[in-house]
Image (cartoon, rainbow, N blue to C red; front, side):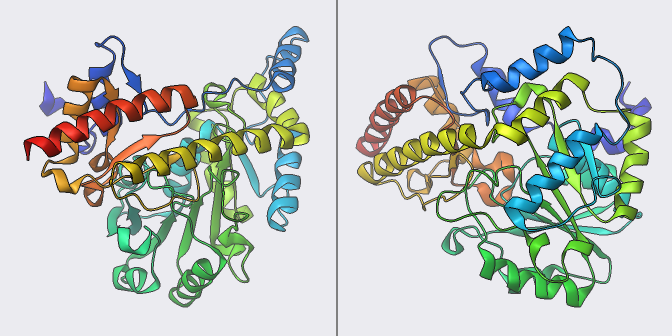
Length: 389
């Protein structure tokens, strides 16, 4: 039957994360550190707004772009956190998670054969979305010795006459790396000189532990060439509500809205009402969760140090990316044996690109108790491997 299927879709590999966790679902007593999902419940005042919307019968379509009140609150949020002015009427669109915003943003910008630069390791959706839009993914392999930051010379070497977009995935999933203002200024200079666009995926912007997150769109000359993507899943523990957004120049938003209009119609109405409350009154919740994540982050870094496993310090998101090269196994082999022998589930680094080889992604969006148990099991596994070497 495969000859009747789309060659393009058929050629795309399934998500390495989901492929690996099919194994987890068949095992008992597994401590899973793999899924990038907050273990916190959505704060009650946000849930209450969703419940209230249902009770009041607010279950109809919203406008294609999203509730006007929500778009206004998004614009307010970006203004107070980044100092960027967006017009909620034509420079903001509400989407079904950040993932939809990535998809329609790429499709709105590229023509057949245009190139999309994707630094890796990074979120699994960028490359397939570029392929589905008939663009050519151009991969930059980020390096651990650079703290997995994108360097100006790496970007320059990747740009050609066909380059249309740079994906900027910071704070980064899976590495936890960040780009500070100085890093971004060096990148922005090249973007402007080469006249290309940036898609800045800032879904983890509120989970920054070293310093306040800076958006590249806030730099001089960058708002007009940036699609800023964010959402509610990570900062507000709203993964199942499926709500994200994009901010960009009105001509780009107009084309993104057209695709969204025909494919989706509008984001979930109940979720949109809840998101208004999140933006208005959720700052304390975000601060509390960020503090908890930071405690877990420090615990894991200390645990790896005690195990003599190299792990650069991540300053964003809720992942660590330890190096397991000393054990002479591929990331997938190591993760599979760790799961089978100690019942700890982590994601092979190669799920996020070839440059993730030799690493594991471990999420600390889990309780400290579970993290402690998992590290005890990992320590036992590592000691056994070293004894056998």
